Image (cartoon, rainbow, N blue to C red; front, side, top):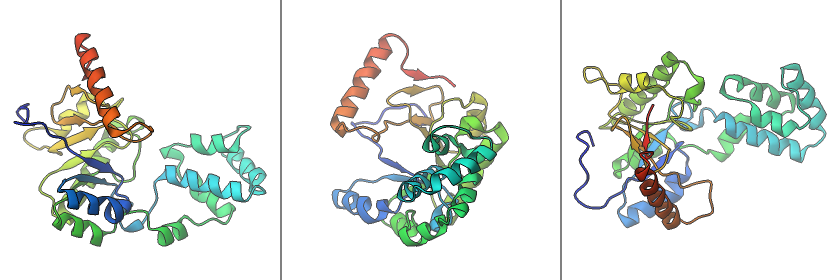
Length: 260
């Protein structure tokens, strides 16, 4: 990859984001049986179920309100008092971004809902013990930032901090051979300056980074664009065929590369 050389035979790299416990319970046994390796990208703040992705908090809060409709008016007033006024409470909750994520904890307290109880009962994330076991079984691990912000909403220094701290944590704690990182959400809107910091030859932060723009070339050969396999009812086979078709069509127009 560093030399832009193609593999000798057709191959693919399977990756999973967010470090969810289903990887250990369901996915890994299937991959081991079939002899397929994979990389799992972890949000370091969520390992061992210590915290929860803010978008998950939004979904849980909406479900709680649906089960307890009497909370609708109370929470509408709460969000309005915090600058979020809308006729639809669910739209308000879904519009809250990373920088305002603490509102979810306050809202949960108001309506007597506990994200901590959810984490302890459901245990949605991988534990350190599970990660070490999976690592011994041949799976690789990288970082997915500390707590899953959208990078285009962060300044450069915070982008670097989120990346460097999470990557170093994963590499050192779980004795990983590479510094690997997958952007949370997307690398859209991220400047070339960040990638130059990532791959600086003298003091590189990363060995490779991964994004989700589909089958495309990238301005930085060590930033690998992945094909998203979620959010659609199409089969994996159809998704890959479609990506190849788009790639070839865009190649004719010189539009199959990501420029940052």
